[in-house]
Amino acid sequence: MGKLISEWRAWANRALSEYEPLALLLFPLAAFLLASLFPLIFRLLDHPGSIKGALFSIVMAILRLIPGVTGYIEREKGKVVDKLQASVKSGRENWQTELPRAGLGIGVLERLKFEKSKDVQWKGRCSGTVYIGGSESDGHFSLINEAYSMFAHTNPLHLEIFPSIARFEGEVVAMTASILGSREKTSGGQICGNMTSGGTESILLAVKSSRDYMKAKKGIVKPEMIIPESAHSAYDKAAQYLNIKLWRVPVNGDFQADVKAIQRYVNKNTIMIVGSAPGFPHGIVDPIEELGDLALQFNICLHVDLCLGGFVLPFARKLGYPIPPFDFTVQGVTSISVDVHKYGLGPKGTSVVLYRNHEIRKHQFVAVTEWSGGLYVSPSVAGSRPGGLVAGAWAAMMSVGEEGYLEATKKIMEVSKTIQQGIKQIPGLFVLGRPDMTVIAFGSDEVDIFKVNDVMSSRGWHLNALQRPNSIHICLTLQHTVIAEDFLKDLKECVIAVQENPNAFEDGLAPIYGAAAKMPDRGTVQDLLIAYMDSTC
Ligand SMILES: *Cc1c(COP(=O)(O)O)cnc(C)c1O
Image (cartoon, rainbow, N blue to C red):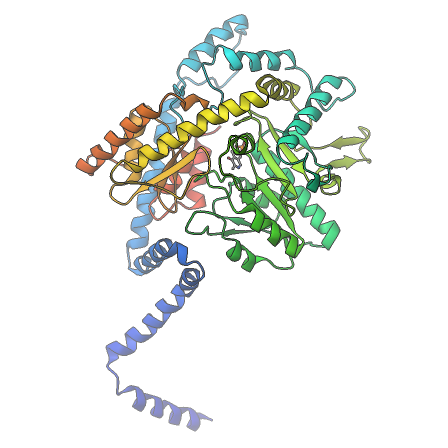
């Protein structure tokens, strides 16, 4: 045995002596490098649309192998986190940390006014955020406030005490369903749902119902869901809360869900796929019909995220805009989320989740028979719920009416067109894809778009920073119908300012999810958590 080994050793050494020692050293290193790049190369082959992103990752992976580089990146990330923390802490002096000894009584209203005066002047200046038009002290705002305060102390958990709220909720759901295909013969007339606290809760409930429906129907116990990269982070939240494996699939060159790529991830554990109409980042509607076909083919659920588009697309279509199918008239669609607190012009904290039929929705409820507190049934995440918000949503929809929504949609679609054309005319900027609605994302090949965003912020604009690729967006609401000229003028000047003096602007800080885009080498989940937890109590 020993002889065999020494013979083999002699042979191997003889063979290797033909090579330079340096080559012998470098060869395994190169092989190791290549092996560590394999996953990235596969990603590149799989998604040719994301070549830039993949190349970036490859370069970063190689750089990280150079001694010292990882440390440098960590130090740079640390600086960003420190900066975030410092900016949060400096704003916290004199915060109340104990109850006042003597209550302020009615005097507390003065304090409320004082604190409110320090909030950002959002009027016509913030992307999304406030969707109702006009000023906060009159018009639709006052009407919503009055409806809210009239029912502020009611609770739909106690249906028998507040039949008014039960009726309002039922009617809000029915009216919402009626604009999203419940009246079409194709959908079978069973569309049903509930009000929730917002888009995230609507999505969470739709995912929960789909998971349990697929378990009952197909016996899936290790659920997986597949979403386009552009789908809202609420799906990550749902996946984490509900123990579902999540696949985030890159979008195609038009920033739409890539249906073929999604199909490659479908397996026997897939419970659902998702399409947005439109997606929050780029305001582009996914190909819902194709996703519907895919869902039918594999007998899985399809959730359509109409949080943003639910109260715009149906009216835009009526106004003659070319809007592809997006609602229950598409056969494969099993659930929909739609926010009343966005373009529904309701108070914050209102959304609707809809299902194609009772069979799916049944799985949303929690019913308890074993509790010493008695029989308990609850449809939503919250137990007690704010009846004032239900009344506020009802009041919004009833007071605006179909004509009101048509008029509002016309205004925001027109300002969207003006701003899209204006951005395209600013040298150095380009619009991402073809926006279907009122969200316009734009980027630049010439200037650092985040610096442009910082200069815009210094002028009082609050836009959203996006990543992959780096860009910013504005979500246009009724607050923006008169600002198109101001916005385009400021944007043009800010681009020129950065072009002329690219080094004069230090990297500022975007809001928390903008910060992710600004972290060197993209922020890790850990960085984001540290920064965020420090900004809350
Ligand atoms: C706003 C939005 C959500 C989440 O809604 P919240 O009300 O913030 O919870 C989900 N999806 C899309 C497309 C959205 O625009």
